[in-house]
Image 1 (tube, rainbow, N blue to C red):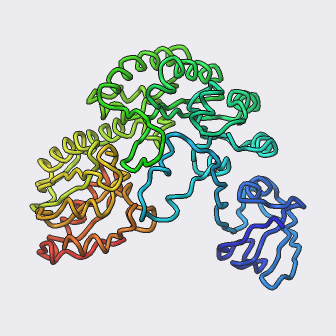
Image 2 (cartoon, one colour):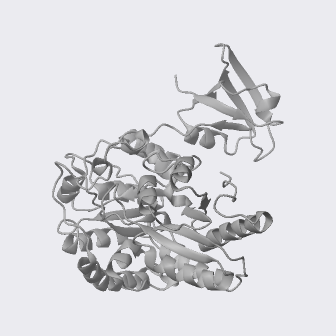
Image 3 (cartoon, rainbow, N blue to C red):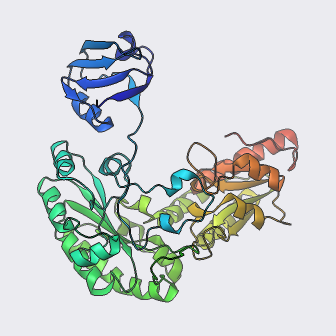
Length: 450
């Protein structure tokens, strides 16, 4: 039987007044069985009178007639649905390239339209059932984030490693007709879905504007652990330069035609090519920022604004960890921040030994790699680590190294900061205040709060 297990009940809420508790199960709302959080939100969104069917922990069944003011929450929280597993065998799948010894959840491939709606996860729609597509339309699950990769049906099957999948354009056209907003992506594999194939894909997706609101092109990531996997060509500096030279013009032409930015090239292309980024206005409202599009330009814009108001902090040394690809703009920001704050701030670009030197983004830096990079290194009063390197809420790196373990190995406090210019500045100010109060050095500085 479909049901939602209650995780918590807010004190003083409607649910609390009806004596619901964590562990009870919500079976249905107004006779509609609940499969997941989406059903709960959909069937309770605007109803002021509801019949709730509850199964208590002892198996007793309750029917509760609820009346509430418009918009008043019931006070219930539930877990997110467990993700549906991906049945694709993509040529470029990053999970297939992972080394052993990482956290177990990292090896799980998800392909769930619900998490696309709830969390912005990208899905291919290659495994979706007709009933699930109908549900998206009926319940207005919008926006969705869709991995297209190619609109050529045969090429798309080759890229996804699966035959007999539904034609993506038919799916997108149906969603567009229902006015479901979509953001799309192409993982670019040189020699496969670039050139004329990419031109075809871009043209097809732009033809579905405004339902398809944006398209991001991101380079494939290749680790050093591609044993027994298809041979793929990496995106190197020369390729990135040529790609930008051609496709920046196409992006501008589409912007003029559609009236707003539509086609976006991932920041990684510009970092690999060593070329300047587009003007910040070319990113619109940053619809693809979680996909690595516009993060660097936004960082640099925020840095300029922040540096105008920086005040002296104190005289001490701090090391800031970054990925190799981010070193250039991070170093520039930290140099100006150091000059204005009086802090000796040293950037440390950590080479990725876990995945291989070709993986250069900050979010994939491992704890063991940080520790090995600091052998014989003068860290100073503390080590600053951007939060993108850690699992949210757990303080653990990709290789399962905890902050406490890293601190013990390097013999110095590790401070996690929000990975923005302001986040770095706030962390340094907090450190400076502690040092002033305690006249501390590396051994005297208190451990960072988690």
